[in-house]
Image 1 (spheres, helix red, strand yellow):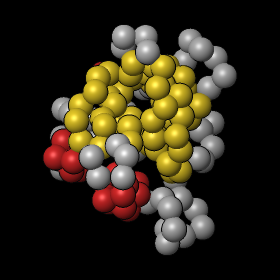
Image 2 (cartoon, one colour):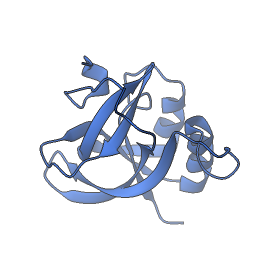
Image 3 (cartoon, helix red, strand yellow):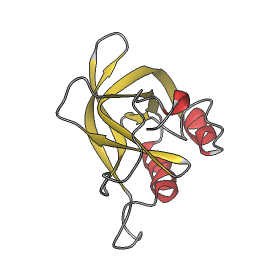
Length: 135
């Protein structure tokens, strides 16, 4: 099984206080900070990222190289409520997307994208959930 990259931008980041971050820390290696071309919205106490065509829109997060991706993704899919067995109306879909490391290197990594409408959600203009102020 080859290692997979995972991009986390919200409650799964270091410093967010989520117990699920421990799963990522134990099962992966921190690669570095990265950005995703998208917008970040506040959905209650957690965020949701959506892709954007505008290169000025960025979401800040962390990339991890997972040693046991099947094991980790089974648990994270359950945490994010997506994938088989999670009903007809999940909030997120796990997709492989292009990201940019802080070094400027382009990589492909898995990301949980919010798949509902965002019109009535507050935007986190900084794109950084840990340093957020929504408007």
